[in-house]
Amino acid sequence: MLDFPRWKVLLIAVVLSVLCALAIPSFLPERVTNGWGFKPPRINLGLDLAGGSYLLLEADIADLTATRLETMREQVGTEMRRGNPRVNIGDISTRGGRLSFMLRDPSQVDAARERLLSITGGGAGLTGQREWDIQVLDTSRFVLTPTQAGLEQAISTAMDDATEVVRRRIDELGTREPTIVRQGDSRIVVQVPGLQNPQALKELLGRTARLEFKLVDLTANPTELAQGRAPVGSQVLPYPGNPQGLPVVAVERSTILSGDQLVDARQAYDPQTNEPQVTIAFDSEGGRRFARVTRENVGKPFAIIVDNQVISAPNINEPILGGSASISGSFTVESANQLAIALRSGKLPVALKVIEERTVGPDLGQDSINKGAIAGVIATLLVIAYMLLTYGRFGVYATIALILNILMILGAMALFNGTLTLPGIAGFVLTIGAAVDANVLINERIREEQRRGRGIIQSVELGYKEASRAIFDANVTNVIAAAIMFFFGSGPIRGFAVVLTIGIVTSVFSAVTVTRLMVSGWLKQRPRELVI
Image 1 (cartoon, rainbow, N blue to C red):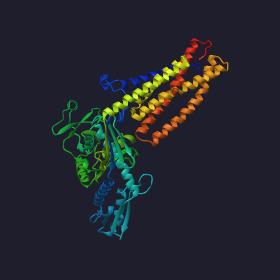
Image 2 (spheres, one colour):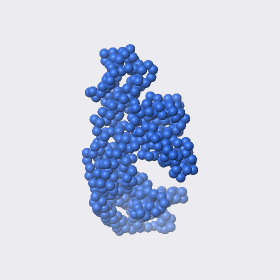
Image 3 (tube, helix red, strand yellow):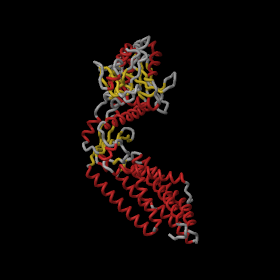
Image 4 (cartoon, rainbow, N blue to C red):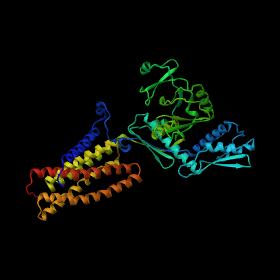
């Protein structure tokens, strides 16, 4: 129990050194760490500590339903016109929240049904129910009704996309670690530390991302391109994922299509190779324009641009007809899904309205930090004084472990890019008080063994061995409680659970392993009988 191989001593030293080093940047002003040449990990302050703006956004489900209905109306019209023979239909009605139209030739009912099945989607989520219910009335009238499962999936997809759009918009501000999370089925919580003007934030979220499709200029000289110069009629745009290695690319200034013509983009699989790809769909006007451009530019690459940054530049292998296309290449499932999200996130897929807003001033946050720091210092000093007076040398070891535990908690939070909130400070102070519980159990157990007549070495060995069981059992229950708070809580409660969990892990490590290493080293130097 008291034997430590050299590799174990080195491992403990490395863990302590790394976590303590990671805690240092959080104590320094940002102006100091900015001059280091790299961005060190540091703890972020939550809205209640740093001050800032809080918004609760709610999706307009009625708007989403109307948009989805209009999009399907355009797809139905396009699908009936394409192909040979053409299916002749009358005007498409959207009354009553459903689509209906008449066939001019009742003999085409089977052809019309097949085409509708191809565009109304498969099973919605895991339900197996179709997104649209297709009915044929009076042998020639089709009625398409959105199913509840299809609507729920559309809401879920729209909210995921809206969350991504909101995040991309807020990142333009260069703010410090904004918190953007979904709440329930149709709400998004936005917390931006350091932003004191919620009106500016609301205006930012109301912006629509600009999505464009342009042809790549193959005549551009790579040397001039690296210098930011493009041929006449073209422009240089950043392209971080350029497979050619150059972080920019030249594209023609004329726009083939804009995001207004894109209605959908999803990660899918190539039916022949089963490799991940991205499928995109345009409205009727966009489909016609895209078909004409791709027919005239087979073999050339076109750039997909979001906010003046190229995110992909695939080749046009063949004319793309029918208002839909697929983008294939060296995609993984994750990269294909990210590209699909980026394309869908060109604009907010659902209208968002602010239903709650508030601003936390920086003075209030700083006051909370000061009071939390005072509480932490007082708790630490009282615990240290008690341990020194009660256990002497072993109290010194417990004090060293306590200080290392504080640094390790801060280092672990910085490593995981954690956010410290006011309840998190409460969890931090609670951890300091509870951190020495393990040392108290161990030291009292050692005293008990000494009272039974055992020597110091045997007492220490049995003390650590027997007390460790109770220590681990007690802390496992604490971790379970913290996990329940994290998964079922939100906001400040989750912040408290995160700090508490990290504190439990580091306190057990410091109180049991680190102090045992220090005691072992001391006993090897002074093995004579002692009493604590």
